[in-house]
Length: 94
Length: 461
Image (tube, rainbow over the protein chains, first blue to last red):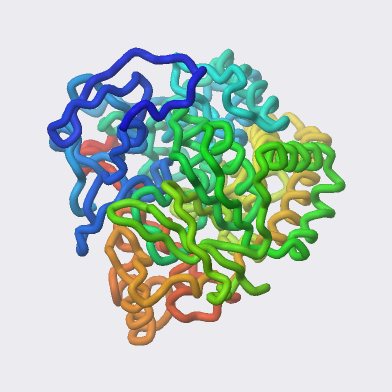
């Protein structure tokens, strides 16, 4: 399922990256978290002890629940913008 | 390699929201060199969030009347000579120095004066299933809609307490989401306490009417004295259990009902972001109505630390009007320190008036202690470390109910959010009588979880 954007705001240039080895087309200016929300990828990491699915909680860089691994570096998906060709993997232990 | 990563300014401002922008505009107009650091990707803060460059809101997303202040502020800010550093996380500071990480690089800002305007974040109160993907803070949903133009889902529930539930509902409606229910834990009668603050303030009154009209138009009724009891779902939220609460916020389990949803927004008010202020050594106080700690400032926004000023939510939750007035005032206080110019009386009066109206509002929506009974023994309370309520309570019973004792006893609050999420409710959850002031958060460097290279490569003071 895709296309969960509010119409009438103006489309931005496409940016392609991979999430868990799958190709995702976002728009320039999207955060990783919001680009993945638009493609209905809500689970961004597994919790540290239980391995439970976790996703965006605060969407403003406070909670660190949306940690993902981008080209080997752990970042917050909500404060990191998409870049063409980036490889995003599910985050592990915070 | 760090030599070129040093900035110089007369004033360093942390936060590009209403308070930070208001301060920056005044200071830049007076000819001072101003650098503003913000974690977001554009100026505006949370309340005046802008869409990414290339997208424009030409009416698709409904905006309350107060947002014209935001547009005016942003227009001036964009044309000013202020240096804005976006995506900047401040992780260490001392008077006259701010260390920050931007795009993975380590930076230092040297500035004689510091204005703290970091804003606030949502207060979370744990309930069963709140860790499921699809359950977000109220603020998160607003960022999604107003900051990125993304549709949160098809069917939503908004629950919590305080005036911020309304913009969350209208943001969802703008995105075409069916808002199944909007749940305010406070009773209608308790909310009447906010009236003096609203009635005496034309702007707040017209704002309230605007929201009422939006909800009416969409057929969404705000249910007073209701909240969310829990969420369920396989890998993501699929159902919400909602019900009534008593006057102290205690869930009345017999009223529980289940509704199908695919997104939930929960926000029980806001918590001032005071960590940086505490680290700088600024004096704070327990803000009874807001049930949170806030920085102490004098009548012209000076903190207890020389050359450090504070404005907006960090001084107590108050909203954009207060923030703009205090940012304005803080800038004049800085100008007074630099040039000896007098602080205009009207500016001081305006800030005091706005703060007074906001305080009345805050008292009406102070967190209800009974809401801490929503969490069950196996509910995760510290999300970073996967600590359940039972474990946190056992730790408190064994080591004591101070924040530090609970932390040492069970690791709650030791993760990368540094207890910003669990901290505000941890003591009330773990057994201390909830009416007591909670402990000050334990603040340590790095104030934000940054890369170790950032710390190693930090430019010297």
